[in-house]
Image 1 (cartoon, one colour):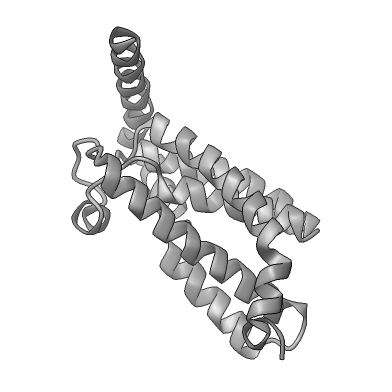
Image 2 (tube, rainbow, N blue to C red):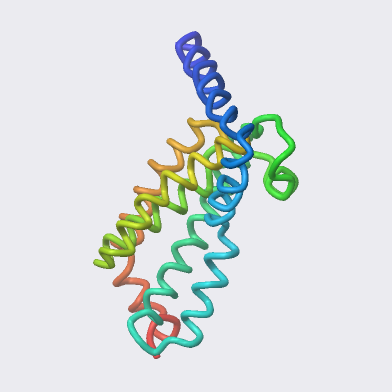
Length: 185
């Protein structure tokens, strides 16, 4: 069993390094940076806060719900990361991530991206859900290309994000009932 896990991890490093070679392309690097940062929780939370603050439509409710999901996701992922403590791949890019969060498993960006896609599907926001579903793969692979994650970090993030997405949809009515002042004007 130990030998099988060792082989899987070696394959994970090998395949991740193949993707990292794409970062050597001068055209791919800036795009990968943009995509990698597009999944940052701070940007999402700031954007959702502005929607929540200025919207009187259903988006007031949705933005609060999505922000709550992101906060729950961030706490859960950090807890897992600091329990498992898998170091990020060696590299220079992503100093902010490497300094503030030195652990890579699971990928918080991949978890957040797929969780948001699941939530957008669950909230029946179909055109945006389609765009977010495509974005999941772009942001996730950008993180591997830039060398801040291994492929297994991303795959684990996807599994966790799907579970969190469905869990949040299940919790949605309870959250609305417990915190109506947050979700409704």
